[in-house]
Image 1 (cartoon, one colour):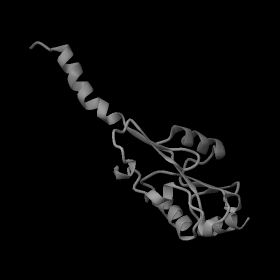
Image 2 (cartoon, helix red, strand yellow):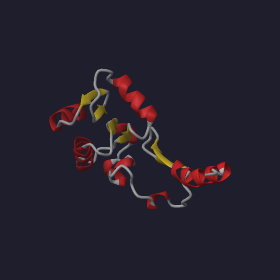
Image 3 (cartoon, rainbow, N blue to C red):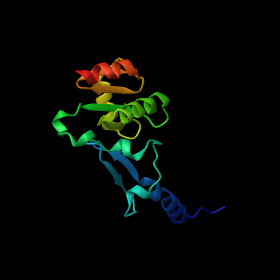
Image 4 (spheres, rainbow, N blue to C red):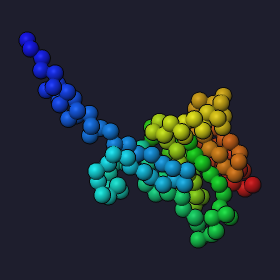
Length: 145
């Protein structure tokens, strides 16, 4: 059997190149699409399973950004406790930034730097307090500061 190497290369490139699109979130919670050919990123299926509104910070009652608590949440798309943490913050109209540590290598590195001994998720940083996992009481206490 003769293998035609240029034909194999063409076949591999045909299927590998479309899979290069990726999604990441910056420090401000903005969604970025790399390699996507769509003009409307919102029309893409949400790969994290999180509500799109949770990815953009919101500020209740049009308050000044400086008055809002600073909340960063390190999550994965499959974690039920991450979804509980997000739901808690949304229900309480708390602005927050979400970082998927499986999609964003920089976020994974920041998470390890914040709490090197903790490999679990979610990890929340609320007004400077690092909170492991999800606890309604711990989140409320950190938000009160």
